[in-house]
Image (cartoon, rainbow, N blue to C red; front, side, top):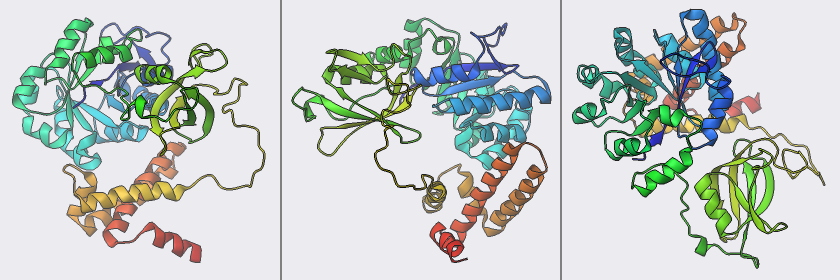
Length: 426
């Protein structure tokens, strides 16, 4: 299993602060900018600790965590100030892929089973400050959580008792000591001071770890450059596409040096034919392109690069180089049904291939009456949310309802094709 680099963003009064100690402002405190920075510079996930006090400040913090999740292009883990199931719900609705429950608090220990069943085991982690906290609740944690966040160097003690994944949050900043920690089987992820420091070159640290035989998430091509079909200049054209919108941004060329530099840095790098030199896109302008995927075509002679584009791709200042319309026929670019179908397919897969800890499988196991009860509850929550001024609540409750409705569809064998045809008929 690959070792993950997980910076920690500490949130207080809607700003980024320095950590558990004095909590001074971290840089300029801009949490969205910090989230984007970590996303673009080699982090695998992002841990957010909410230091808010009181319900009003907590609600404001949830809003900022929603902004962080939107800005981040890596999974976000939410932690801190969790007192009830509603807090877990708000974090997940804000966009957190996982939520951490503090096992130094009895209320969080009591909460784990409920939220694990409701939201899924795969979304739950627990934070442990002492080995005894894990030992006393080993069975509960293994049954209801996907991993452990170790807030002290207790990873070896936990590993002696369980094979559960462990993320170590540590103040250790010496690379040599961190390498030693990551060489052990106990540590599956690293968080804390070193990986959270913006001056740390995570891409270079990962390269060091790879040299030490430690598996990490880096770009490795499945096809050697020697197998590419090159043009007469010894290069391949690269079509660059926005990974979120699928918008085609530009066309450029790579030679072997540019290709290898792209893999090593995670930033799109080309060979400038006009200047006859290596060219990292955006190095001067700041309009960098961070690699999401590289795909080779069937003839091995063209690369499709899906990227996170910062600013404009075109030297003219346009978002894309392709902005001169020649001919165009109007058409609808959106397809909501594709989203619905994807979610439905996942639900059907859970039904046909049950997954331990899955909330969807929990509903199927409980049967039709439980599913109907949840559909009814979600209908009511939509009505309640609609009476509030914040449309975000309505959006989340409608999404919950649609999910449970699709579970009902799967249970009854109703497909989206049938629904669409019936709507079209009407």
